[in-house]
Image (tube, rainbow, N blue to C red):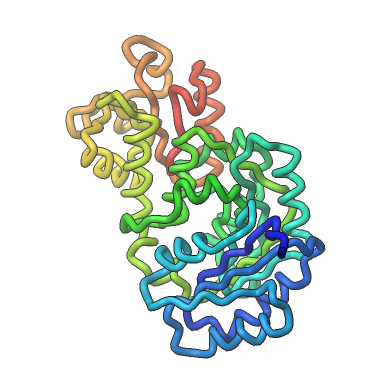
Amino acid sequence: MPVDPAVSVLIAARDAAATLPSTLRSVARQTRGDWECVVADDGSTDDTAAVVERAGAVDPRFRLLRLPRRGVVAARNAALEVCRGRFVALLDADDLMHRRRLERQLALLAAEPDLAGVGCHVRYFPRRAVGPGRAAYERWLNGFLTPTRLRAERFVEMPLGHPTLILRAEVLRAFGWRDRGWPEDWDLLLRLFGAGHDLGVVAERLHAWRLRPDSLSAGSPAYSLAAFTRCRAAFLAEQFLIGRDDYVLWGYGGTGKALRAALLEHGKEPSHIVEIHPGRLGNRIHGAPVVAPAALGRPPLTEVPVVVSVAGEQARRIIREALADLGRREGRDAVLAA
């Protein structure tokens, strides 16, 4: 009787014939051999299926799942149903795995049985396509070293690249992917964190992440700034602000304004707004007094949770230090949310 593989590499693909061969070769080169690779063809009109069939003819560990065109969420969930591994490694149809990616990430999962999954650091390619925004996000992703920091910054953006994840199969099956009109990958991670699961990271660049102008994230309304804000607000309301209608909002620039409006849809309204701009101090914004950061250390604000919404890692780092000086505990009574 065939032995089930330790890990299933899950790829959802649509019209990916141009990039999929190199992606599959990167899987075939893995230093661990106890894998299978399930490719869900989401109604492609090119030779995507033929690429997988040719790979499977040479190496039966590659398996093709033909599907009608229903979108990436449905394709991933369908592929997950047929994965046989105890772990599921995610991979996009145009990305590349370092040959030791499975080896290194599975080793961490074996050493840390309480982790639901692990990601790794990334490198975008081609480098000529990496603009300032992507470069900043790459640096931010590659700065994470511990599960504690991943959890603390989960509301800023997605702190692990979705295609870098390896998750325990039973955990992933309990959640799956869903379509809520915002990024389905961040939605998955925020639900995992909200349910009490921890995630880890291998601090090595084991994933090459291709940048393409026609990628899903580049053109889909679910990946617009407004969709990210709606997602952030929904999970802040369900998790950090659960049981409360009030909070202190630190920052009222573009990101703070958008987040305040989105949280209002969930019945959450700031009682005070923290600003450092001297021209705003003492004023009111939508009825909320504008106060200096020192006010957080005095009643009545000492018991009110703080949501920080500012753009830029340097600004967030300065505010994190200020919160610590004020006795605020990040993740408990203060949270960073871009």
